[in-house]
Image 1 (cartoon, rainbow, N blue to C red):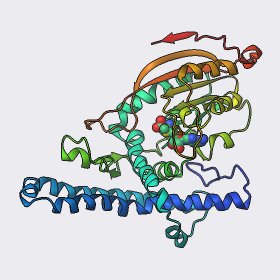
Image 2 (cartoon, rainbow, N blue to C red; image 1 turned 180 degrees about the vertical axis):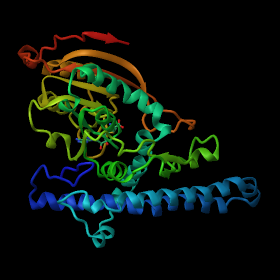
Image 3 (tube, helix red, strand yellow; image 1 turned 45 degrees about the vertical axis):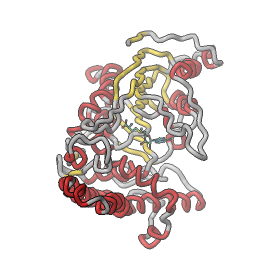
Image 4 (spheres, helix red, strand yellow; image 1 turned 120 degrees about the vertical axis):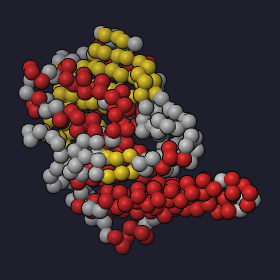
Length: 393
Ligand SMILES: C[S@@+](CC[C@H](N)C(=O)[O-])C[C@H]1O[C@@H](n2cnc3c(N)ncnc32)[C@H](O)[C@@H]1O
């Protein structure tokens, strides 16, 4: 997959052989197909409930007349979401140089086995718009992104450096808000993401949304359970809460598409790597940590915040290791990082519907560690001797 810049035409980072290109083209088409299938799939779900409803005893139906109206509203919300989805996928064929899907092929490659998983991801993408680009997501961003932004400002004070000379990488950037906020403060910031669901949506927000709150989605419309009020399911959320084009003229902000492990191979390049809800997205988390260590300049820092959900854990046909945070800490120190700050039980949420009767909260870990100016050979051989210099709870 080629690199995607947020504001200018794409510039390729890697060459691909035709096999890779063919695989990538098929993958691209599958994701476009998933977005296009959203409305049909979502309406089928409502219709299933409606048909059961119509088989209920008439007096039950009468008692549930408001619920019946609510299902009509749910269908309207799905239609509205579909309008946004149409905008998101409108020009995606031009995002990358090496994939140009023809519309004819898209329908034919719809694979029923992956339909459910892909529809979950379409829905998660809609919810991610709330986390990253809505007023409703502000509290969540304050808990997850602000500690990272504050640390960047602390490590690279604007008054003591030329921020555009500070190169910061945000792997697993999602819809790009954290990377955007870092770039907004003047740093040179690059977000990296490999999910086309996210890349299509971030391309839409970052390159097409020219004003605030231009669009609305209904992020919780697929949550049929744990609703206190019907309007909690159908709530509309406006986005973007800020204009993504509102970056200083000097801002250096880009997004790259591709696997973090494959795209970032240049050693000693970055001043800072900032990861938020990311390190648990690896089959082998040690490989992520090793790569972060390698690509940081000597003296560079890694800021991390998030849980250890281990996304590949127990997935069929996937391999995974799931070390506890204590083990991760040993690995970090074992590579030679110096742990400068550490905080556990940081209360964080992820694309949470705050009105739901079901709430999920992570006791995340936050840490800041530094690649030493001189490599620590003892630690690199595996002896984890370095404790945190500053430990908070
Ligand atoms: C849990 S989400 C977090 C997104 C964002 N950082 C946030 O806090 O909202 C993790 C993201 O990392 C991306 N990701 C996972 N593995 C990746 C990899 N190897 N290279 C690039 N992106 C990856 C996923 O597609 C997903 O968007």
